[in-house]
Image 1 (cartoon, rainbow, N blue to C red):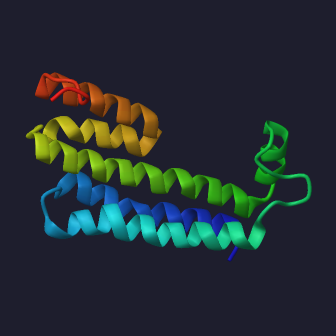
Image 2: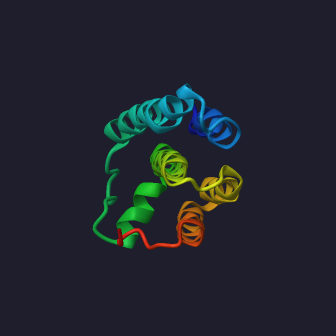
Length: 142
């Protein structure tokens, strides 16, 4: 499968999990799909890509130059993108579960989920701020 087609496919595959997290966070299958099934399936794709294309000549993780060389391979670039997709949806699922556990209104979590989808770390930081503002305590204090 061409790398461009694979890139489009994995972007489509992650979208239902995000819709479930935003629209029906309390549905029993949302957690299964968003926190387990989607990351697992995308993780399998990631593993196949990395095992099949690992470390092109001059590529690696030892320096920014080696990483740039690896990313020249379009399949490795898709794997790098998949890494982000997997972690972001997992973070989104965690935030929904955490908010439900703490009684944070889902309406406050939705913008955090959208930001996590678009820019993972920004969404996570935003969720932390919402969590602290609503719960009125820091996570490391009981």
